[in-house]
Amino acid sequence: MVVVVEIGDGPGTTAAYARAALGLLPGARCGDTLPDVEVLRRGVTVDRGHLAAYDRVCGFRLTDTLPATYPHVLAFPLAMRLMTMPGFPFPLIGLVHLANRITVRRPLSAGATFDLSVHATELRDHPRGRRFDVVATATAGGAEVWRGVSTYLRLGGDRPGPRPVDNDPPPSGGAVWRVPSRAGGDYAAVSGDRNPIHTSRLGARLFGFPRPIAHGMWTKARCLAALEGRLPDAYTVDVSFKKPLLLPGSARFAATPAPDGWTFTVTSRHPHLTGFVTH
Image (cartoon, rainbow, N blue to C red):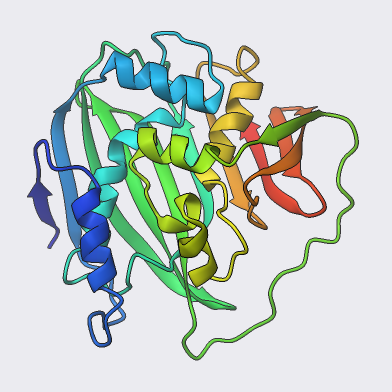
């Protein structure tokens, strides 16, 4: 039986990260089952000032049509609430964001009102640990208008395996992005994703990175901003996150038309993201 936890306006994600830190204590997390819990928030509206700030950080034009990645930001506090609940089997801090799929069923207006829900599903093996999906949906007038599926990896356990290696040569052409140090903090401010690996050199070093890394969802949003005006009204966009993009840094964005949409990559000496759009 699914337990529905309905929430209203909350304190944001700061409290959730405090709970996430507690989840790192020995014995704080255990189990191998995802909770049958749906976190729900009704009557969500868009703050146009916040939308404009998000658009600027990610490179979108300022319009009243929501970028495909923007509902992910609206649903992020619900996902944080879910993944920091006492019954959740894995600590939030340390999870690796492997992939994200977003389906836009029709253009979304900034003037619309949505109901948002989040749940976790599909816990399964991975060569380097265990992975699962966090599914977020937005409905308007009782119909689903947007869906996002984020796949996370919990490293470790008794399932060791080699790290996948991408041997494909990086594509030529495209646009070179110069990504400043502030990109992590700027995106954290508009998304609520304040994971210290993105905003703090010390926090990044604690998790094995020489300096902060760009948010994967910022990178995805920046790709869609580069394709703005060339996307259909309804589409699905899938990305896989590869090697993190260190901040500051530079990377090359390249996109290629496909029979049913686009394929695109973000690379430097290593691949950072691969993705495709399908109508």
